[in-house]
Length: 412
Ligand SMILES: [Zn+2]
Image (cartoon, rainbow, N blue to C red; front, top):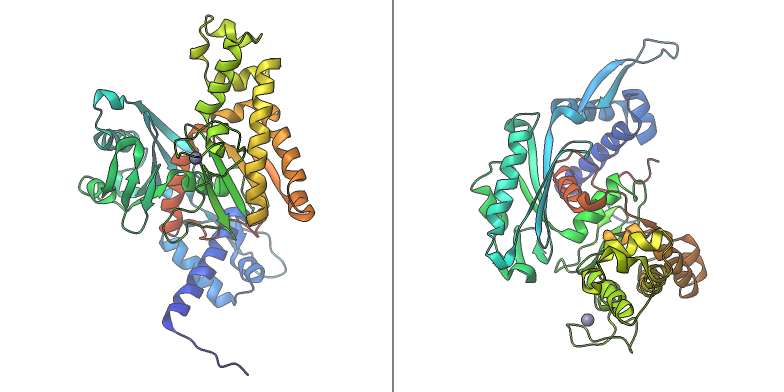
């Protein structure tokens, strides 16, 4: 018989897992009685009662009246207290700082977006501070009830040290962003890579709610993915997992900034899609897009192409279909590697809808093993442009114990 070891870390871990289970059930199924919580989690009533007590003290859970009697005394019911605190999530985007302030249901109550011009010498860190100050000023709750601030930043992020190791957009190297912000804001601060943040937001509160294994692909000026395995972010030891940009999808394709040819980012990023459309228009393609840009093809952007494709423009439809096929090749690689339940596609390009997603789904079926190919669903993101900011706020909640670490998976 195997010997059993017990170290104190295990006790804390078990306590956290039990707390997560109770909290998740109250968030998803409340109002609910302590007896039902004990029954559903298979914990002893004494353990369930003491965890509920702890959650009440943390102001995360509150009493919500008496439930119906099942023969004995009527039980007290408990519900999640989403309005007890607020959280701030800020996404540093390539030409904009976008911040949201939300209660613990992660629905933005206040959104502030400030555009900046990097060539004009904008001080992006200062702008982040300004946006946070504006959000705090607009908060319905006082600063004492701010649970924390989360930041979603593109690039290589050391989440433990709160440092932007490298971010090409701003030539940042080893920028101690968390410490810089901590000088001005006395609250817990967390930093996450923006694709991972988006995966967290979509995973908990968007298209991935209740799903354990999710890949979230963000198509913008660049391309990246956040990977959720068994309900938890998979970051890798260098926080560099999900860097899918340079997967080869067409060896005859155009040259990429990395020096290789036909990388996924070179075929499906927003600039790559616009480039193909502009080339087609210059070669005389007939499209409603020409009218929208006053016959200057260079002004065409990906949002216009996506909208036109969705509205039935044949040329735009063809551009999106091509994009969808390349996207499908990239997703098939992820499906063969990770066997996810769900792949979520985000970014402005998703306005195209089925002209993009249908070809991707078709290609994935052709290029994967039967079972994973049948299982995986490929869907559009639900949280829109605010997804990484909401994800950054979500990160604060997972770190501060206001969300179950492993998501809501298993409770649906
Ligand atoms: Zn490349």
